Image (cartoon, rainbow, N blue to C red; front, side, top):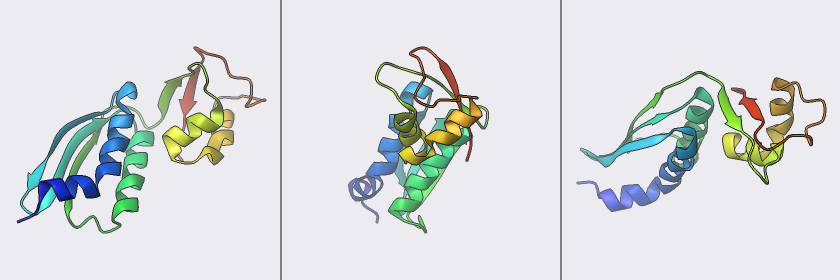
Length: 129
């Protein structure tokens, strides 16, 4: 029989990734055992966030043989984001893509000539890569 605590520890980064997107509307509705597998059920707000969760799963175990996941995307492919104090495009890129290096793709998707000129309260589109 699988150990729930051990599997939760193994996939802790996946659970944290989903919970890290709670401000954007992600929910983690179930973390339990499904036979010998960890069962994760939740909802993410966009394909952008779903891709980030999927990357987290593959980073833990590319075969995810001991994971049963039901992650549903509730919204559009792209993700909207409202700029907060202290944000920059590299920080936003790191949050949504796991790397700060895709900041230019966010700038391009939003028609920003200068990626350093974003303002608090500005709405951005975070594109699917």
